[in-house]
Length: 177
Ligand SMILES: [Zn+2]
Image (cartoon, rainbow, N blue to C red; front, side, top):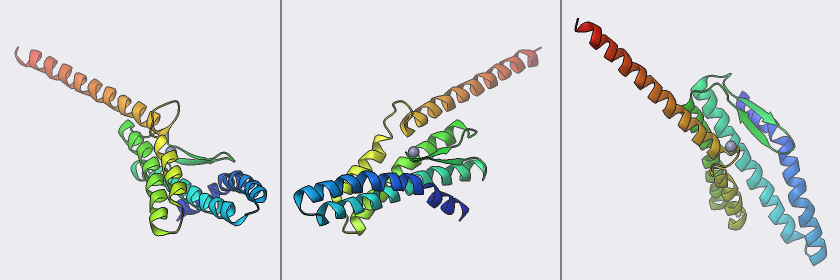
């Protein structure tokens, strides 16, 4: 419940930014075309799908990070530009899962809204695409975080296996004497 309230509060700033970015041009376009209803309805669906997808995306990051690492494992950062989840202390494999679950949840919820409501399919597809683009591993996307964490996890496992082999080798050498 605390997580849900935290998310809703965190969505306020980016939600208002999204509303300004969509309703502003929609009003201008509608005024120019002498048809306000169509662009304003599209902007309304855009804000609904956008904010719900954002809640699902960041909510999934936050929920899984806290489930895997404990209640203090993840923190929500909010700004006018968006929301993000910080979970620096997680095990690399857990970090990779936490990074991947956000875009998948955001895309699934965007598609789900189009399936269950009269929301225009192109709007839901566009938002689902934005969530999935986050899986492309460039710069600081979720895909990049997952790839980095996955590699760190592999290196950690190889180090462990090498240490175990070295220990077994030493024990074998001393055991034979
Ligand atoms: Zn994300």
